[in-house]
Every structure is written in structure tokens, then in C-alpha cells.
Amino acid sequence: MNTNRLGSRQRLKHVVVIGCFSLVLCIFVCSLQHQIPSIVQTKAIVNRTKVILLWTTWFGDRLWFHSKSQIGRHLSKAELCPYTDCVFTNDQSRLKEADVVLFHYNDAPNWPRTRYSHQYYAHHNHEPPGDRGLFTFLGKYEGRINITISYRHDADLYVPYAVLLPVKNSLVYKPRIPLASKRKMAVWPVGHCSTSSKREAYVRELSKYIDVDIYGTCGTHRCPKWRWNSCFKSWERAYKFYLSFENNICRDYATEKLFLPLGYELIPVVLGGGNYSRDAPPHSVIDVRDFDSPKDLAQFLIKLAADEKGYYGYFEWKRKFKTVQMLPWFTCRLCEALHRNTFGHKPAKTHYADYWFGTNDEVCDNQLVPRMRKAGGW
Ligand SMILES: *[C@@H]1O[C@H](CO)[C@@H](O)[C@H](O)[C@H]1NC(C)=O
Ligand SMILES: *[C@@H]1O[C@H](CO)[C@@H](O)[C@H](O)[C@H]1NC(C)=O
Ligand SMILES: *[C@@H]1O[C@H](CO)[C@@H](O)[C@H](O)[C@H]1NC(C)=O
Image (cartoon, rainbow, N blue to C red; front, top):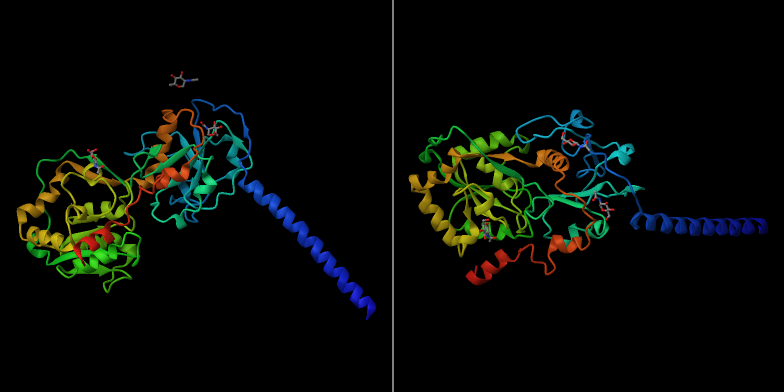
């Protein structure tokens, strides 16, 4: 009895001691994680292959949306890839030779143990800073990141979702699909039903005046997501307009929601924070912000749908340009910038959160739709 009690007291003591030790160890290790390590002075070797090290995952993907065969290899030459003397790798043992160490959005960084002064730490983000709760990383990146890679025009490396390239054979644009055969008004493929931009409220009101077919989990129409191309092909035959409504209304944030339909015979109706007169092809989109209300927009769409010349005027730009998805090519942009030494010496950024949100939260305007609602009484 007595020995038993002694034994359990002893055990308790052990547990407490081990517990305290673990706690202290954890505090020490955790604080190391948040400490900015001292920087080892190193010199970049000029005129050699640039090494781009993917340090974090990309939404859990260690290949950063590339194929396995592309990792650890030189880039291949292509229209959007004039510079190929770069290797991008996820092999962390190559840390020391890396010219760039890449971190993605909010994916847990687990910082490298050693930082070398010839390296750039680059932060790649293509998400909108509309919701501070989704941007917990900014505190972690403060004082560490040399280069921002994003869709923002003011990024160190500007990588939009798509770019416009001139095309040569450009004499006439012949519409492929007769307007009369497009029997329906608007299509809206959507995955998130409740968003910061409140686009769903806008569509609800718009639907009172024109038919909007909602594809995906928020509506009743279905098209398999893994067959985008065939979905778009059927949509361009049936619909006149495509709702390109972003989930956040933030500066320069124009995504594949805009650029995918531009590849087809569909007019995008845009709700977003992009500067479409600069970044979309000329006279290619209809901007919600140009109308006081969903009703005004609907009236405009109804008129345009009955005016063949006016309608096809929105595809005239296709005589001169094509759109090409840019995001998969960001490593090429990075490679080019490294070889041209575009960045020079770039100390780590302080006030990185302010950069993303704006000091007065002015980078996003998710109050746009609520303001319109209030003003229009709908
Ligand atoms: C690097 O290459 C460029 C172009 O080939 C050459 O002009 C330059 O002198 C080289 N620099 C060094 C340090 O070798
Ligand atoms: C959009 O871009 C154009 C061309 O660069 C510029 O003149 C205009 O001021 C921009 N509009 C806004 C709202 O920033
Ligand atoms: C990146 O920032 C760190 C910290 O400011 C600096 O020591 C390093 O030299 C910078 N890298 C480059 C290539 O400019």
C-alpha cells in the first residue's frame, strides 16, 4: 500500500519534470522558428545557372502545379520562356546554392536554418487580401521577404493570371457562333456560395431581370469541373454573357474568371477590383461598376443581346490579341528577372502587411455591393 503510493508519487514527479522540460524545449524551439536568423555573408556567382528553390508547398503541392519531370531540370524554351538557364527544385539540401528561396502564400514556412546574403527570399501569392483572417502569415513574413511575386502591378515580379499577346493573322474577325443560336442570357459557374464581395447578392437581384443559369454547387446546373474546355464550348453555344464575378474586390485582382471566357465567344460581365481598361483586351468586358444597379445592367444586356453588331463588337479585339494564361509561367518570369538582374540588392521588406492591406485597408473594397444595395434600396 505504502510503496504503491510512493511509486505513484514518484511517477507524478517524473511526469511533472518531463512536462516542464518539454515545455521549455518547445518554447525554445518555437521561438527559434520565429526568430530571424543571422545572415551569412555570401556572394552570388554570376553567369551560372540560377537555382530557384521551392521551400514551402503550393497549397500542399510540392511540385507547385508543375509536372514531376519539370522539377530539378532546366526550364524549356517557349514563347513565354525566353530564358531557360534556371533550375527549379524542391530539394532542400540545395539551400546554399539557391539564388531564390520561394515561399507560398500561407503555407507553413519552417524557415531555413541558415540564410545567405546572396539569396532572395521570395513570397509568391495570388490570393486577394480581402479577409485578414486568411492572411495570418503576414506577421511571419515581416522583415524576411526580399521579393513579392503576385498579380499586383506594384509587385517586384508582376505575374498576372494572363497576358495579352499580339497575333499576326488579324484582318477580320469572323464570329463562329450566330447570335440567334445563343438562346440563353447569362451563365455563372461558381464554387463558393457566400463570399466577401457579396457577389451572390448582386446576382440574386440581377436574376429578377434576366435569366442567370448557375453552374456548380450553388445552383442547379452541372458541368464536370475536370472538363473545363468542353463546358466552355457548350456555354459559348448557348449563352450570350458570362458572369466573371470575383470573390473579393481588391486592387488588380482579376483572375481566370476573367481570362478563361475571353478565350471563347462569350462576353464577360465583370465584378472585381481589376483595372479592366488596362488589363483586359480593349472593349472586351462589361463592368458592373459602370452601372448604378443590377436593373440598369440588365437593361443594357437585354439591349445588347438584340444588337448583333454591338454584340460582336466585343470580340473585335480578337483580331489583334490572344490571351495566354500566365500563372504556370511564373518561373520563367523569375528566371528572366534573375538573369537580367532586375531586382539588384533588395533588403527584406518591413511593413509587409501594410503593403498587402493598405495602411487604411484601402486595397480591397468589399463594401461595393452593399453600398450599391443601400443606395438602390434592393
Ligand atoms: C557574364 O556574361 C556576360 C554575357 O555573356 C558577359 O558580358 C560578362 O562579362 C560575364 N560576367 C562575368 C563576371 O563573367
Ligand atoms: C486604369 O488604367 C489606366 C491606364 O493605365 C489609367 O489611366 C487609369 O487611371 C486607371 N484607372 C484606375 C481606376 O486606376
Ligand atoms: C535579402 O534581404 C536580406 C535581409 O535584408 C539581405 O541580407 C540580403 O542581402 C537580401 N538579398 C538580396 C539578394 O538582396
